[in-house]
Image (cartoon, rainbow, N blue to C red; front, top):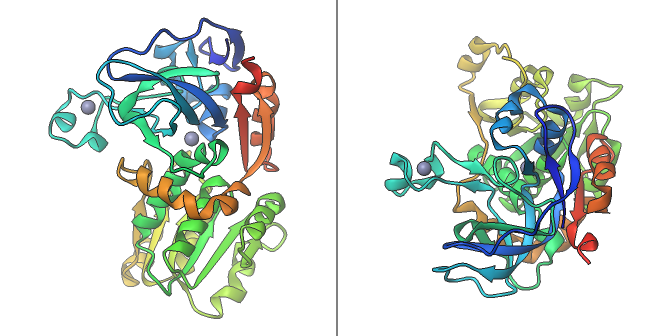
Length: 349
Ligand SMILES: [Zn+2]
Ligand SMILES: [Zn+2]
């Protein structure tokens, strides 16, 4: 089969011919991969960003961690998954042996290995994964939308962390895949207004418009303060959720936040960011970080997909077969695409 792999500790990925995975062992399942999203992490592994050099220990490895697949074979002891069942895959494989795992708190596992990062992932037509990482997708939800589960859990966790309440006004900074999901879950939580802002992001803001959002700002040309001014005339925001990784947005984000408001940070910032703590203290504001969602978020997000499939589908702006994955990566690197889906079965025949 073909597989998109990181082979050497340096820039680049290679589409290689590799053997099909062996039969699943105890507690494992063989999945027929249906759709795999291209994520920022994949771009970093491709470009060989220093913060991803830890992947060296796993080479060669098939990348791709945002995928859905059908259960094709099950190893010994697997229960609760039927053959042909469509599943999304939690990429984080916990060790089962550390103190946290033994205490029944796998979310706190300290020696996790990511599927598609430290062990073979979904940019291939077949993959073997632990059965406990498979989250059944409800009937009626199709495979490409199911492949959005992982990034949607990140967005879901950000909104939960912000404690968005009915009637809140929420500002989302960053209209990419994660920001779009945040907007959806903030609306679902009952926010009265969800404003989403970007910078030179016309294509991604258009996707949000198709998803039914109308309070959209592009700061390019105006700058952030001027872009926000009309919205701040109605008052400051109850919750601001940042999904940009851009340090320049943090100070204006705090200025746009109410007294007692919450600023949630989800972006990965390359360097420390100075913050005016005195202003924050005087306004009783909170800054909270949000990252990987707990395991319990996954079935909730899968269930949410049932009623929102067509809205979510707008996030998928490009589809490519595995043989054209490089093209898909280029689209993802460009701000034109929101989510590029690679379709490995188109190459499997
Ligand atoms: Zn990802
Ligand atoms: Zn563990």
